[in-house]
Image 1: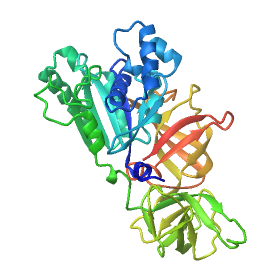
Image 2: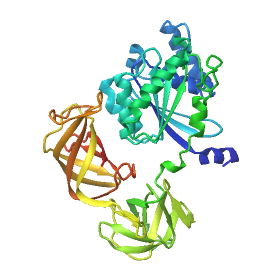
Image 3: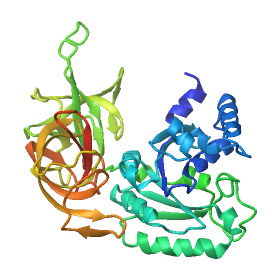
Image 4: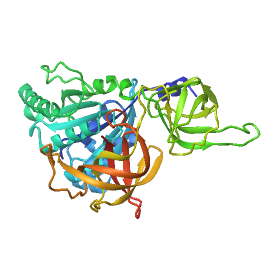
Length: 425
């Protein structure tokens, strides 16, 4: 492997999602980011130039880079989550371009679930809309650590500072009611490139960083929980070969915390304890491993451990909660309504079990940010608080402490469709 390839693999990865109302310019912004950072291949550029001409546009429509479905191109809207990958000399990026329509709330939840940052676009002409509040709430609910409010289409309001200031004030009122930790504001024009990658000459009143500078320099090292060691076992490795006759390794991904050879660990749900004998990564043996590495761990004692069990540090100040009853904020994905006291398959880390929805406490009105205790029918895109009862104990942390061990999905037993995603409270 060349030094350049090795450097690329070791670069820090930032995942971010875009959100905003219809026609706020999400796809155009991503196209502009890719174009101005020289991340578009020549054949891609030629293809969108041809598509733009066919559509009768005067300029190249950069939104076509992410709107890949024919229906999206015909209607000029984003329908499904589109992922794009690119890199600059400082960082690698995965972008999730999510739809703006109210009926695609579930798509935004899917795209934002693993994001380090959310870019919420606001049209400078229209200001803060209901959909802006909805997306700010979802970003907060999903505990996305960094939120960047991009006031787009500043070129259409003559780059007026007072327009930007008014939108910033309105958004600050909303974010003060939410649990957003790091909120930034950037005035941009995705169409012409103001403050996207290069600084705008039209807005000398704005002294802050460009969007690209922010994305390259956001501190994301502390986004992962480094304190609480959690290792859901995915697979038991037993080669029983001539070279490894007695090897028994527990493979999985460290979802939070760090582990060292010699550390005392506890196995859940059995409660048995042991010490870490070795940490293996391919053919290498490590002295220490940390989230989000995928490794194989061997123990000094022979303990019955299988997929769905979890290794935690015995020395941790507090272990995960262990319970068969969990409170969950949930977004319903399916076209069929949730069945009262319905039974579903629950997947959480590497564990799978059956569960029942024992109670719907309230539905969230994400336009007004108020709780509705009367209308408890749960349909597609609804966000609700529910109580679940599982058939066997769940080992979990609350979602605001650990996004990996605090999230789950529900699956329909009959159709195998993912019907909901939940955040454990």
